[in-house]
Image (cartoon, rainbow, N blue to C red; front, top):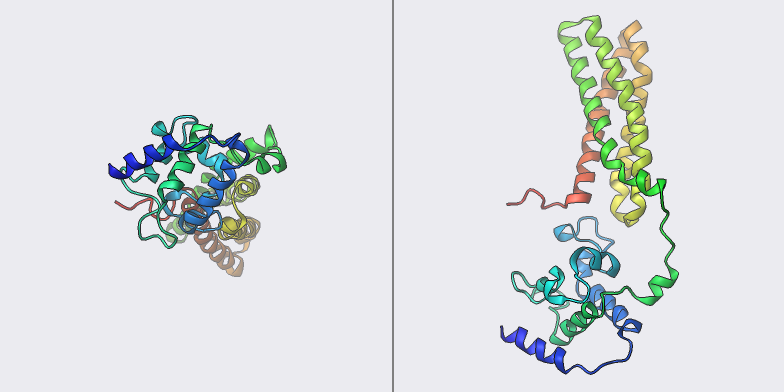
Length: 265
């Protein structure tokens, strides 16, 4: 409480500095880069709390700030430590000082604007189909995962009981798994543009490997059905590898979206 009272006095006594938008957003971004990027920087593969864009003021303002009203902003209550102070007192660069907090509060009160340099140099967002394609990744991603595992299950049943119907079911599943993997990879490549490259590389190339393996399995499947022998063994090996790759790619994608601590109690 003492900290909050001192802060409010500091804010109240802060003199007007002309147009805050000209310099305050830049100072706030530099402050967040210094104090917060260790745990929440855009270059981190697994940022804490699924928050990995400490230097992107526009994104922070959209999700955590009510422009013009610090007291109604989620970001503000994190910073003053009402529940859990961020950055913590044991952070490498230390917690925010009262003057740092006053600067952030001023920024929020002025509308939580992005730095002018960013606004003038930013590339306009592409409207229409690209953004829709990127957003549809979450819809298509389930199909190759489910169909590859269904094909693997069908092949396991074929090994156990045989039967043309089971064989055809597996062929159907792996064929559509490969087709849906192509669509999923395309939409995922588009969605990756909104992430920093270092964070998506593992997920991206695991997904590409899964696409290639499932496509090879779909191509070998007809030959395996006709001839058996080494084509059948190759098909089974490709199915196992494809299943492992889609599982790993899906796991990495889940970490990107939800963070490592998603299941923590």
